[in-house]
Length: 116
Image: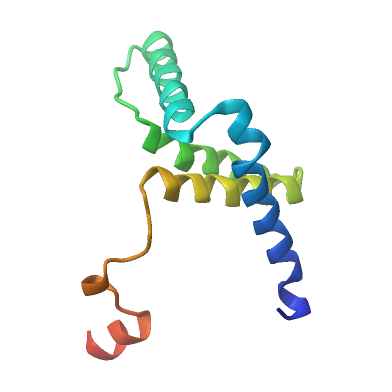
């Protein structure tokens, strides 16, 4: 891997280490911990605004990524926020069991540009 990708590699490896190690042990499977967070958020929104929303574990990672993006806009904790942003993206993929595109639907952007 070239030197220009060294930081990206370090960020992604740190995120993977965190979500598969200590945080997995502390918080449990993301499906369970994110489902609990979703219930808390829904209860808060109901109590605070009288708005009934149905949130699931699948809603938590995208919303947490928005939190990290907001922090990045302010320049706060840049490295840690980037690690967490990647971590939430990986957890999102895990919750959705994203193993990659289905073979029949897999087309590259260059295929779409030339065929579409």
